[in-house]
Length: 303
Figure 1 (cartoon, rainbow, N blue to C red):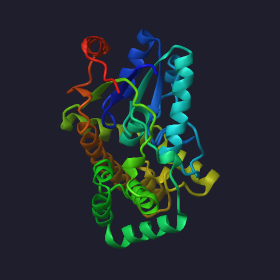
Figure 2: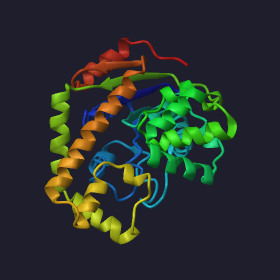
Figure 3: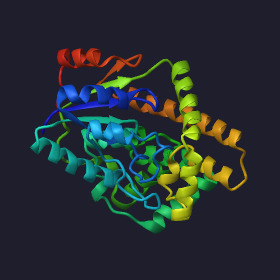
Figure 4: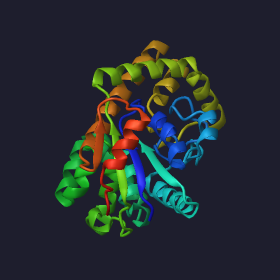
């Protein structure tokens, strides 16, 4: 398998812009690892690359499903493996760009969730327990049954904690069933601007979303689909934009809550990626040539 370049970091850290600079020089195409940008029509609210950017550099795994569909890491892994196989045949470098840690892990290391069983009744019972008792209690149970799986998921990520517990109750420890596909060779770069700068970028981005029409976008989505799927509703901001349209939240409060939630999410992203010793970190958004030089002198991370 061909070597990957992987660019990770929190939202608004400059990952997409850096990948766009590097791609022409490397004869590369971008493979997005973002659990929100897979939804068609959710463009402004997920800070999706513009059509001009996509015309300049091919970008994959955007706009895969409708916003009323459920899409998870198991589907993403299959879709990503298919795209990477095509790029390898075409002798193109793949630049994986992502803030969704589990999606990045699925691309680089391979997860076997795609082939593991589902039980809707069990999942529903676990979701109800999480609502009653809190996700931390479920995470503690997961830690007892499969400590490695518990380390790979944030305690408050209800959806993934429930999925991991569902699998462990059906077939035993999930980490014993990760994909047997060999890990891909990769050079991994991480962006982590100073937190005060990152927060300013996030706050500015949210205000710009409103200026660019995220309220109108949300209104159109509701008119077309009626409601969004549970996975689409994890996209930060949309629950608050919907509440504003329903008249239960002022626009100022919707903006404030979206900024707050996105800042909190950026901290969770940093926590996830910091655990990966393979990442070479840059403490500010670097120039493309600085990253290119670092890549040239670094050791490939082989499986």
